[in-house]
Length: 107
Image (cartoon, rainbow, N blue to C red; front, side):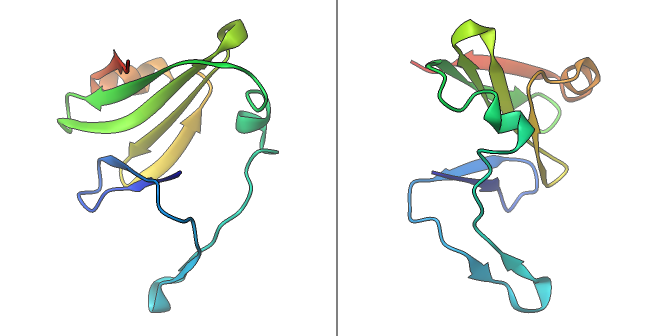
């Protein structure tokens, strides 16, 4: 699965298509790398996924992220904030308040 920022600069988009690198010409390139060894991901790799929730911003009025809850209360959030992708274990309170974030559990 590929997660990326939407054209509107706020939403988080998902694609189940093949994950491939892309040459963006003068804008650089998108490269595919394994991030499972990065600290924010390594603590959840191999854990059992308990639930997934969408993260909605009342400021942007968009779905801007996903919240993953794993066994042992481990969590991972992926957010599009200001057209940049951020990954958090626990979302900082100032972002929750400033963006007016709410979570909706997916069934």
